[in-house]
Length: 262
Length: 326
Image 1 (cartoon, rainbow over the protein chains, first blue to last red):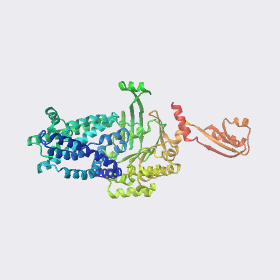
Image 2 (cartoon, rainbow over the protein chains, first blue to last red):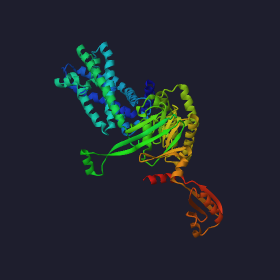
Image 3 (cartoon, helix red, strand yellow):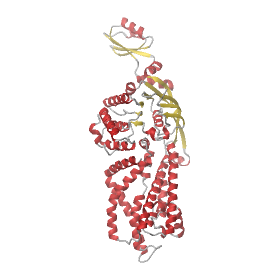
Image 4 (cartoon, rainbow over the protein chains, first blue to last red):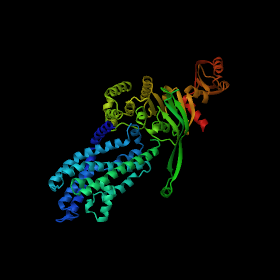
């Protein structure tokens, strides 16, 4: 399985290098988007503080967010769903491994290629803004499981939404709903700590924060030990839920795969 | 008796949405969708023994490809049983998938922008081939299919025929025991069709692989399959030898005569079902039993310079099968 996924990733990488310009444009969008929030919140904070964040904290938050959102972004609605709709899933079903391994290979290849372009821009931004970093070694170590689970939740949820293509040609519309909620409660429009009370309570309970903003909060050392504990417990629980939903949707979906004439 | 493929009462129905054209119909379909059940496969049974090559014949939409897709584990059937190499295909077990292949003329598993050799390397890892087995497999396929440098050019730059060769090679790299070939020669020129046909025959002889093949080209079926299964409307109409098919559905022979000089039309009509091709060439259709007597009579009564007795062409036989079915 592992050797197969590695080989697929290599081939996907070679494939993606053919589309350097497109990759660059995608990566550029992922830089520009968080910069908008970085600027807005820096202005709002002024010389004061919003929800415990000063201007420099917002800069640091959105700079790390930029990388985390890039690492966690799910692209399966664009890469996997069309395969189902157009009957192109068939060659992948003939391989002795779950087709999601090849979707994972595509995901890893995309992120590797675009990171190569994103990192220099990121370093340049960091050097220009020089935001204060208040995290510690424990935060950096805890970042590893936090980002891993966030990537997993995103990939499994993204794949489950993509598999709606077994039933509908508009799986994209459902994915838009997830993306809107991710935008609101995942820590993109504002760090979860800055949200109004009700929205914050919702964000802490729902999966979106654990698929995106939580690793940023962890690495920046913004959480109390008790918050870290609940955070990881909930993140673990949502990872399991995502895996179960993924498996159920796949099992039901593959029975419907028909692609007449494909 | 061991069989590689066993199919019993296999049924596959698709449900498809449908509506008439126009804006009103499209508005209506927002609120109320109409669905239709397509009976692609409607209760099919057959066995295939190890090493056999079986040709699937049938018009477009007969259900041939659907059967192959169910047997290769792509589709779940609506009802019925199928066992391939001891496995239920749609459970998609690793031991099953590593022993069979499905190659579709119109579909490709090759990475479009990369040379075919890159797909080979992926398949090597995915199917868990060791270096030795991989090299032996590539060498033998390179030799049989005359692949040469085309493995090292991006797939998108290959001609249709070259691509089909690379596609076949990629699908056979793991030396499968059962091959499902769906229109392997579709769109290829006559020379390339011939070469692919020879390759399939050689592969079958060299490895003893079991093969089910569909094709629109009767020449493929004639050259490769001793046994054919004729399918239409999701049902098996005939399962047996090619010769038997002609015997059952077109029990006549065509006698072709070349004459030394033209003969009066009235005189010819006495011989029965006669087609005049041109002044000096005529064709006489007769039942199989009556063919020897008719031949003797023609030779005695007419100025014959040359004569041949043939079975009707396979295309004609198949047309007769479908005509009777409808």
